Length: 245
Image (cartoon, rainbow, N blue to C red; front, side):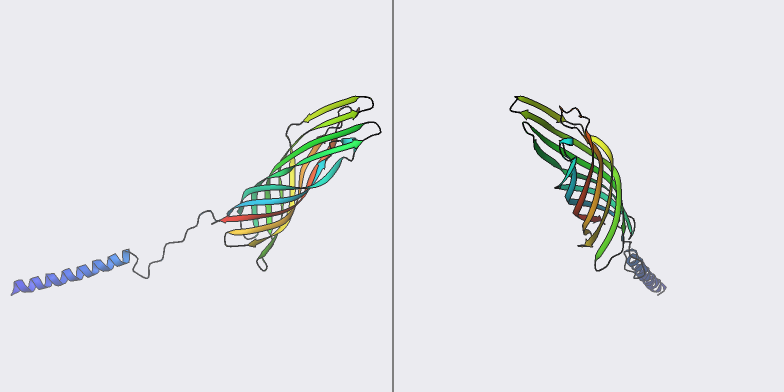
């Protein structure tokens, strides 16, 4: 009789121990409602990539120098991209690079008995560090202002040709310039709109100063010392920014 009673007590204790162990396992595997969920961690918050297309109204040098006006303007294009970081709701900064379309020029000046002509190809690029101030958001639109500073690279290639048919005179001079680097700076203003949580469209205006470039005059001129031309650009830019969340 005592043996049966002892067996009964041991079976009851084993059952209680199994129930307690099951409860502990449920708590370990998250079945307990009091256990806080794991934090939702994000990678790269604040970083973004950008790409831009540009329509430019450029000031370009006139390779005929003193034979004509020193500079002129022309519409062109540009492409660019960069990487940036948004510090908070108001401030962001980025590093951008732009390639501006080549400025090709063909010029001719006719005299009484002679003709001067010139061909040129001006190539330009820039790398800028920029900072922006976002001015708040209204109806999904965020206006901003900004400024940038960096370096510009400029190269001018081309040729001069002078002919005097009545006297049989003819001269030809080739321009083969080296890439020259100068300080570049920019000021910009525009507006952004969120297409989605990660993708924004950016439309704005930028004034870009690529420094100056000395343009040689016609080769046979006794005043062949060159003209210094300031290279500036008024730009309408449209681009996309992709936020890395």
